[in-house]
Length: 475
Image 1: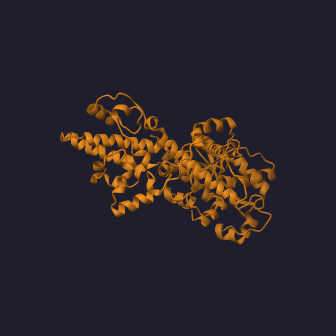
Image 2: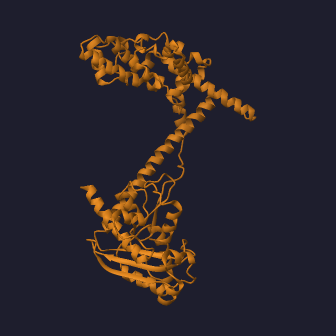
Image 3: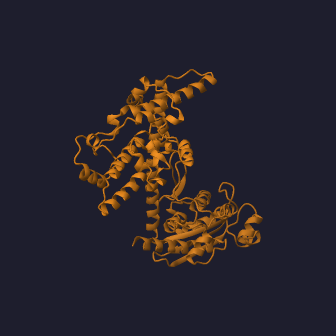
């Protein structure tokens, strides 16, 4: 294992990095040319938004330009979380007000429905779930349940209304405060005229029960088909309140005031852009995952032919300024048997730092006595590995030093290079650490000793165990 991985692991405590990175992260893998390949996703996608796209979407909100309903007092809002919680604490009958257009007060007060009313329209499907349970009990005991069934029908209509309030990034549970509860009071829920085909929240079982109890309806209409002004007024009320707030800010900053048309255009353009960016992020992530899977598959395939596991020791972290002081490599058969070993110390142009001696045990005296020249060592290393694929643990670090040494020695370095680190993550995705020492302990191998040959043998043990784990997982 390279020095960089050892020191970095000490600094980070060996924490586990995520195997899949977010857009903008550069994950280095090895290509079959021996050159590091960066699999990336752009930090911020650049998307094109046409005026026609914006105009088409804004046209759906033409009613906002001609509808400017007055702001609502808190008591006039269909739903306000703070108000609702206060009313429940006080035991006020008004805590049921938001339900009354859809469910009778008698049903709303049932003990089984109290907990599910906490989140109002945002959690109305929890009320529907409780009502279904009560209906099943009544059906099983052959008791009348029509009033519960109508309450279930109303709850599902309320859920559809709540979902329909979502507007250009404003969530439905927030938009509920812009619905005028006085506009809801005249609403009469009638299965005969509303039917079931346009009510998305009804289940197949709900529909079966409704038809059994009330027969086939005369019509099928959504809540918005019959009372479109309720949602539209809520959206318009929200838009105008936001515009007035923005205009107030613009005034305070001495900026020109926006018109509603301009405000809608800007809002829609921003949201179209955000959606397109999200789509681009998803596409980039999918491409990243596919490319990563391809590289990992190539790495696993490389272990089914003769391959080499190698490691370096260096004078520091930077291949531009630091140097290799030890090469080691192991030739391995497809069955995992060691067919040959190579190890040599290398004379660097600078003295071995004391920190490196403490970490590796390699002293300047040993280098002076046994070290070979960098060019000779690199040529011998290349001759030993031949054309075989080469594995390192944390390969990008070692690869940087290998490429520099190959250039200086004027030898070709075109071997396919693979990293055992992502292979270990794939084999054991739940480990806390992927340091070589921790992985060696995990597979029961001898711990690395901060010398290139011993570390290469530890890496081989981890690689073979990971391969075995992968085979077992695929069975």
